[in-house]
Length: 308
Image 1: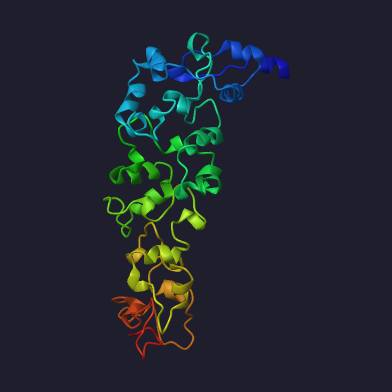
Image 2: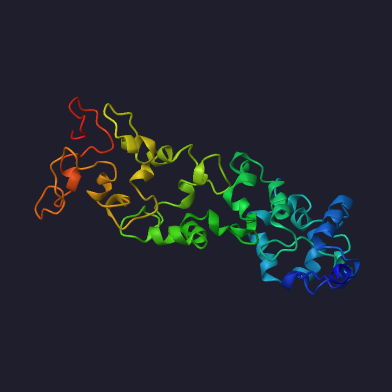
Protein backbone atom coordinates (compact mmCIF):
# COMPACT_ATOMS: atom_id res chain seq x y z
CA UNK A 1 0.00 0.00 0.00
CA UNK A 2 2.86 2.39 0.80
CA UNK A 3 4.40 1.79 -2.63
CA UNK A 4 1.02 2.33 -4.26
CA UNK A 5 0.74 5.73 -2.52
CA UNK A 6 4.16 6.68 -3.86
CA UNK A 7 3.18 5.72 -7.38
CA UNK A 8 0.02 7.81 -7.35
CA UNK A 9 1.73 10.77 -5.65
CA UNK A 10 1.10 13.98 -7.54
CA UNK A 11 2.23 17.52 -6.88
CA UNK A 12 -0.15 20.32 -7.80
CA UNK A 13 1.54 23.57 -8.79
CA UNK A 14 -1.46 25.81 -9.48
CA UNK A 15 -1.88 28.31 -12.29
CA UNK A 16 1.79 29.34 -12.45
CA UNK A 17 3.31 25.88 -12.83
CA UNK A 18 0.58 24.04 -14.72
CA UNK A 19 -0.35 20.36 -14.47
CA UNK A 20 0.86 17.74 -11.94
CA UNK A 21 4.27 16.25 -12.56
CA UNK A 22 3.56 12.65 -13.47
CA UNK A 23 7.23 11.75 -13.84
CA UNK A 24 7.88 12.86 -10.29
CA UNK A 25 4.98 10.78 -9.03
CA UNK A 26 6.24 7.71 -10.86
CA UNK A 27 9.59 8.06 -9.09
CA UNK A 28 7.85 8.26 -5.74
CA UNK A 29 9.82 11.42 -5.01
CA UNK A 30 8.37 14.48 -3.31
CA UNK A 31 8.68 17.93 -4.81
CA UNK A 32 10.63 19.13 -1.80
CA UNK A 33 13.26 16.41 -2.02
CA UNK A 34 13.71 17.04 -5.74
CA UNK A 35 14.01 20.78 -5.17
CA UNK A 36 16.71 20.20 -2.56
CA UNK A 37 18.61 18.07 -5.06
CA UNK A 38 18.28 20.83 -7.65
CA UNK A 39 19.73 23.35 -5.21
CA UNK A 40 22.69 21.06 -4.54
CA UNK A 41 23.36 20.58 -8.25
CA UNK A 42 23.00 24.32 -8.90
CA UNK A 43 21.83 23.92 -12.50
CA UNK A 44 20.83 27.54 -13.08
CA UNK A 45 19.67 28.98 -16.38
CA UNK A 46 22.16 31.03 -18.40
CA UNK A 47 19.40 33.36 -19.58
CA UNK A 48 17.95 34.12 -16.15
CA UNK A 49 14.58 35.89 -16.12
CA UNK A 50 14.45 35.98 -19.93
CA UNK A 51 14.11 32.22 -19.93
CA UNK A 52 11.27 32.36 -17.35
CA UNK A 53 9.39 35.14 -19.11
CA UNK A 54 9.19 33.15 -22.34
CA UNK A 55 6.32 31.30 -20.65
CA UNK A 56 5.27 33.45 -17.69
CA UNK A 57 5.18 36.95 -19.17
CA UNK A 58 1.41 36.68 -19.75
CA UNK A 59 0.77 36.41 -16.02
CA UNK A 60 -0.11 39.74 -14.40
CA UNK A 61 0.99 38.35 -11.05
CA UNK A 62 4.43 37.48 -12.37
CA UNK A 63 4.93 40.77 -14.20
CA UNK A 64 3.88 42.79 -11.14
CA UNK A 65 7.22 41.78 -9.61
CA UNK A 66 9.00 44.34 -11.76
CA UNK A 67 7.02 47.20 -10.22
CA UNK A 68 8.42 46.51 -6.75
CA UNK A 69 11.74 46.42 -4.96
CA UNK A 70 12.31 42.69 -5.60
CA UNK A 71 12.12 43.25 -9.35
CA UNK A 72 14.51 46.22 -9.40
CA UNK A 73 17.62 45.08 -11.27
CA UNK A 74 19.52 48.22 -10.26
CA UNK A 75 19.37 47.28 -6.58
CA UNK A 76 22.70 45.56 -5.93
CA UNK A 77 21.32 43.42 -3.09
CA UNK A 78 18.06 42.54 -4.83
CA UNK A 79 17.25 39.15 -6.36
CA UNK A 80 17.12 40.53 -9.92
CA UNK A 81 20.73 41.68 -9.63
CA UNK A 82 21.78 38.15 -8.70
CA UNK A 83 20.16 34.99 -10.12
CA UNK A 84 16.94 36.86 -10.95
CA UNK A 85 13.83 34.65 -10.69
CA UNK A 86 15.96 31.67 -9.68
CA UNK A 87 17.25 33.55 -6.63
CA UNK A 88 13.94 32.77 -4.93
CA UNK A 89 12.36 29.98 -6.97
CA UNK A 90 15.48 27.86 -7.23
CA UNK A 91 17.54 26.48 -10.13
CA UNK A 92 15.60 26.00 -13.33
CA UNK A 93 17.15 22.62 -14.07
CA UNK A 94 14.78 20.75 -16.38
CA UNK A 95 11.76 22.88 -15.49
CA UNK A 96 11.42 24.10 -19.06
CA UNK A 97 10.08 21.33 -21.27
CA UNK A 98 9.97 18.53 -18.66
CA UNK A 99 8.21 20.81 -16.15
CA UNK A 100 10.45 20.01 -13.22
CA UNK A 101 9.18 21.84 -10.12
CA UNK A 102 10.30 25.26 -8.99
CA UNK A 103 9.69 26.52 -5.47
CA UNK A 104 6.14 27.74 -5.03
CA UNK A 105 5.42 29.96 -2.04
CA UNK A 106 2.32 30.32 0.10
CA UNK A 107 -0.08 28.12 2.04
CA UNK A 108 -0.51 25.87 -1.01
CA UNK A 109 3.20 25.85 -1.82
CA UNK A 110 5.06 22.69 -2.78
CA UNK A 111 7.60 23.00 0.06
CA UNK A 112 7.10 23.47 3.78
CA UNK A 113 7.09 26.85 5.53
CA UNK A 114 10.58 26.34 6.95
CA UNK A 115 12.13 25.90 3.51
CA UNK A 116 10.15 28.84 2.13
CA UNK A 117 11.45 31.00 4.95
CA UNK A 118 15.03 29.88 4.39
CA UNK A 119 14.86 31.43 0.91
CA UNK A 120 13.72 34.78 2.29
CA UNK A 121 16.13 34.71 5.22
CA UNK A 122 19.08 34.06 2.94
CA UNK A 123 18.87 37.77 2.10
CA UNK A 124 16.88 39.25 4.97
CA UNK A 125 19.30 38.66 7.81
CA UNK A 126 19.27 41.40 10.44
CA UNK A 127 18.51 42.02 14.11
CA UNK A 128 14.76 42.33 13.47
CA UNK A 129 14.55 38.74 12.23
CA UNK A 130 17.07 37.01 14.48
CA UNK A 131 14.30 35.59 16.71
CA UNK A 132 12.07 34.40 13.85
CA UNK A 133 12.65 30.66 14.36
CA UNK A 134 11.37 30.90 17.96
CA UNK A 135 8.55 33.31 17.16
CA UNK A 136 4.84 32.66 17.61
CA UNK A 137 4.26 33.00 13.87
CA UNK A 138 6.90 30.39 13.05
CA UNK A 139 5.45 28.06 15.70
CA UNK A 140 2.14 28.20 13.80
CA UNK A 141 3.94 27.11 10.59
CA UNK A 142 3.38 30.48 8.96
CA UNK A 143 5.83 31.47 6.27
CA UNK A 144 7.03 34.96 5.35
CA UNK A 145 4.53 35.15 2.49
CA UNK A 146 1.66 34.47 4.89
CA UNK A 147 1.94 38.17 5.71
CA UNK A 148 4.20 39.63 3.01
CA UNK A 149 3.47 40.09 -0.69
CA UNK A 150 6.45 40.03 -3.08
CA UNK A 151 4.98 40.39 -6.57
CA UNK A 152 3.54 43.85 -5.85
CA UNK A 153 4.72 47.44 -6.16
CA UNK A 154 4.48 47.91 -2.39
CA UNK A 155 3.96 45.26 0.27
CA UNK A 156 0.60 46.05 2.01
CA UNK A 157 1.86 44.91 5.42
CA UNK A 158 4.51 47.66 5.29
CA UNK A 159 1.87 50.33 4.65
CA UNK A 160 0.66 51.77 7.97
CA UNK A 161 -2.76 52.42 6.48
CA UNK A 162 -3.17 48.71 5.68
CA UNK A 163 -1.14 46.93 8.34
CA UNK A 164 -3.87 46.65 11.01
CA UNK A 165 -6.32 45.11 8.53
CA UNK A 166 -3.67 42.61 7.46
CA UNK A 167 -2.87 41.53 11.01
CA UNK A 168 -6.46 41.47 12.24
CA UNK A 169 -7.48 39.14 9.41
CA UNK A 170 -5.95 36.41 11.61
CA UNK A 171 -6.04 38.06 15.03
CA UNK A 172 -9.82 38.33 15.18
CA UNK A 173 -10.07 38.63 18.97
CA UNK A 174 -7.85 41.72 18.91
CA UNK A 175 -9.85 43.06 15.98
CA UNK A 176 -13.03 42.88 18.07
CA UNK A 177 -11.32 44.63 21.00
CA UNK A 178 -10.15 47.47 18.75
CA UNK A 179 -13.80 48.34 18.01
CA UNK A 180 -14.87 48.57 21.65
CA UNK A 181 -15.79 51.93 23.16
CA UNK A 182 -12.36 52.38 24.76
CA UNK A 183 -9.36 51.34 22.69
CA UNK A 184 -6.03 52.40 21.33
CA UNK A 185 -6.36 54.50 18.13
CA UNK A 186 -5.72 51.64 15.72
CA UNK A 187 -8.91 51.76 13.70
CA UNK A 188 -8.06 55.25 12.42
CA UNK A 189 -4.42 54.32 11.74
CA UNK A 190 -2.83 56.52 14.41
CA UNK A 191 -1.27 53.33 15.82
CA UNK A 192 -0.37 50.04 14.15
CA UNK A 193 0.45 46.60 15.49
CA UNK A 194 4.19 46.92 14.88
CA UNK A 195 4.36 49.99 17.16
CA UNK A 196 4.26 47.54 20.07
CA UNK A 197 4.87 44.08 18.60
CA UNK A 198 7.83 42.59 16.75
CA UNK A 199 6.12 40.37 14.14
CA UNK A 200 9.32 38.46 13.42
CA UNK A 201 9.66 37.47 17.07
CA UNK A 202 11.38 38.80 20.14
CA UNK A 203 12.66 37.62 23.51
CA UNK A 204 9.69 39.22 25.28
CA UNK A 205 6.21 37.83 25.88
CA UNK A 206 3.60 38.43 23.19
CA UNK A 207 6.45 39.32 20.79
CA UNK A 208 6.73 42.79 22.29
CA UNK A 209 9.46 45.08 21.02
CA UNK A 210 10.29 46.13 24.59
CA UNK A 211 11.49 43.82 27.34
CA UNK A 212 8.22 43.98 29.29
CA UNK A 213 4.62 45.08 28.97
CA UNK A 214 5.22 48.05 31.28
CA UNK A 215 8.20 49.22 29.23
CA UNK A 216 6.10 48.97 26.09
CA UNK A 217 3.27 51.04 27.61
CA UNK A 218 5.72 53.63 28.99
CA UNK A 219 6.98 54.32 25.47
CA UNK A 220 3.86 56.45 25.04
CA UNK A 221 2.62 56.85 28.61
CA UNK A 222 5.86 58.23 30.05
CA UNK A 223 4.06 60.04 32.89
CA UNK A 224 3.00 56.65 34.28
CA UNK A 225 6.52 55.23 34.23
CA UNK A 226 7.73 56.29 37.68
CA UNK A 227 9.55 55.61 39.90
CA UNK A 228 7.24 57.17 42.44
CA UNK A 229 7.67 57.95 46.12
CA UNK A 230 4.41 56.15 46.77
CA UNK A 231 3.89 53.28 44.37
CA UNK A 232 0.79 51.31 43.50
CA UNK A 233 1.96 47.68 43.49
CA UNK A 234 -0.31 46.38 40.68
CA UNK A 235 1.00 49.15 38.42
CA UNK A 236 4.63 48.28 39.11
CA UNK A 237 3.88 44.61 38.50
CA UNK A 238 1.96 44.74 35.19
CA UNK A 239 -0.24 47.32 33.46
CA UNK A 240 -2.59 44.53 32.36
CA UNK A 241 -3.57 43.92 35.97
CA UNK A 242 -6.02 46.75 35.42
CA UNK A 243 -6.03 47.49 31.68
CA UNK A 244 -7.11 45.49 28.63
CA UNK A 245 -4.52 46.57 26.10
CA UNK A 246 -6.41 46.19 22.83
CA UNK A 247 -9.76 47.54 23.92
CA UNK A 248 -12.45 47.44 26.59
CA UNK A 249 -16.10 48.27 27.15
CA UNK A 250 -14.99 50.27 30.20
CA UNK A 251 -13.34 53.70 30.29
CA UNK A 252 -9.55 53.96 29.98
CA UNK A 253 -9.21 50.34 28.79
CA UNK A 254 -10.03 49.09 32.30
CA UNK A 255 -10.79 45.40 32.71
CA UNK A 256 -13.62 46.28 35.12
CA UNK A 257 -15.27 49.44 36.34
CA UNK A 258 -14.46 50.97 39.69
CA UNK A 259 -15.19 50.18 42.45
CA UNK A 260 -15.34 46.52 41.37
CA UNK A 261 -11.86 46.71 39.86
CA UNK A 262 -10.38 48.19 43.02
CA UNK A 263 -12.18 45.68 45.20
CA UNK A 264 -10.38 42.83 43.48
CA UNK A 265 -7.52 43.70 45.84
CA UNK A 266 -8.93 46.16 48.37
CA UNK A 267 -11.45 44.54 50.71
CA UNK A 268 -14.04 46.64 52.57
CA UNK A 269 -12.49 46.01 55.99
CA UNK A 270 -11.66 49.29 57.66
CA UNK A 271 -13.15 51.43 54.91
CA UNK A 272 -16.53 53.09 55.12
CA UNK A 273 -18.05 52.48 51.72
CA UNK A 274 -21.28 51.13 50.40
CA UNK A 275 -21.44 50.54 46.66
CA UNK A 276 -25.22 50.17 46.86
CA UNK A 277 -25.76 53.67 48.22
CA UNK A 278 -27.38 55.61 45.31
CA UNK A 279 -25.56 58.89 45.93
CA UNK A 280 -22.47 57.54 47.62
CA UNK A 281 -18.92 58.40 46.75
CA UNK A 282 -18.43 54.97 45.15
CA UNK A 283 -21.36 55.19 42.77
CA UNK A 284 -20.93 58.77 41.53
CA UNK A 285 -18.23 60.50 39.54
CA UNK A 286 -15.03 58.54 39.31
CA UNK A 287 -15.88 56.18 42.19
CA UNK A 288 -12.70 55.30 44.11
CA UNK A 289 -10.81 57.81 41.97
CA UNK A 290 -12.89 60.63 43.46
CA UNK A 291 -10.35 60.57 46.28
CA UNK A 292 -7.52 58.30 45.10
CA UNK A 293 -6.77 60.21 41.91
CA UNK A 294 -3.10 59.27 41.57
CA UNK A 295 -3.61 55.54 41.13
CA UNK A 296 -0.43 55.06 39.09
CA UNK A 297 1.71 56.52 41.89
CA UNK A 298 2.38 59.73 43.76
CA UNK A 299 5.43 61.84 44.53
CA UNK A 300 3.62 64.08 47.01
CA UNK A 301 4.90 63.90 50.62
CA UNK A 302 1.32 63.23 51.74
CA UNK A 303 0.47 60.91 48.89
CA UNK A 304 0.73 57.62 50.73
CA UNK A 305 -2.93 56.92 49.93
CA UNK A 306 -2.40 57.98 46.30
CA UNK A 307 -4.61 61.01 46.83
CA UNK A 308 -2.21 63.75 45.74
